[in-house]
Length: 366
DNA sequence: TAACCGTGGTT
DNA sequence: TAACCAAGGTT
Image (cartoon, rainbow, N blue to C red; front, side, top):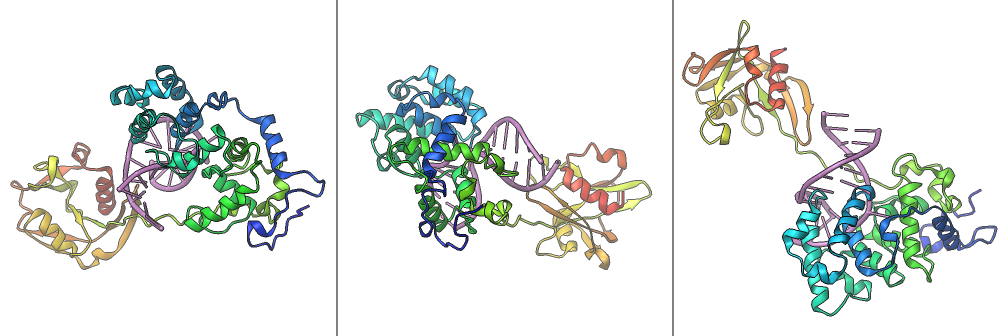
């Protein structure tokens, strides 16, 4: 079934260009691409301006999202000369909603560079010097519009090639990029490098999907080492998620029957200074009692069992450890001034983050 | 190298 | 829902 050598260590160590039936792998890939490729608007011509514009718009952006922007933009600025004469406000207006607005500013700056220097660069190296044109975009434009034989390694190719080669390390590291670029090179038809790059992208976008890839439909599955090993789901390697910033909040519950003690935010707490809130504090370096005293003044004495973690609540980058325990607030508990009692219903009206509210309610056993 | 940049869709 | 992701580039 698999005619590749599963023990090979580098792509160049198993250079099979043809399968046992004698079919050339790059040709096979291209034939598949011609058969199934989506009729995307930027595939209607090899005009460098159009190719470039599409590549910039597609940076970290879904194809379906980019299409209407691409068409509107091209209608407003059909050539690099018309773009170069545009104002930044005009360009940003057409970009509005696409995100990564620096792309639009750099696109305009690059268009003016191009016009000033008398035309587009003719090589990937030349394109690379334009603002907003990185390694990928330069290679994509050069291969599609100028037929330069360079690999355009994007997220799709990373995934496709990491699976083809069962490459076990980070594809985004310098070494990973070199390895995968070399592997991709063997898939380029020298006559049609642009189509070859786009064929690999198309494969990644429609068949070799991030999750549940459609290996049954893959035209080059017989070259895929990951599939040969039945470990497609293990590739590409994913770096472990960066440790989230973990903060610890101490949320305390001072109750009198159904009443809860609120405190007034001190000066220096931004727009919410002076408003009432549930007592809580950062619990990083200082003790909970000191943190509370620093936030609300007075002297706090915290029960010794406060160290018990009752709940953890995660949000985007916040880890809240709710701790239980008895809290005595000495000297500041008297009603009036900076402390007052409130009913549970009143808590809903407070401008607390939902996180602090959750923490408090959990601490209160609500 | 890694964080950051925007938005919208998916799970 | 929170996390992840999508034809990356810049610092």
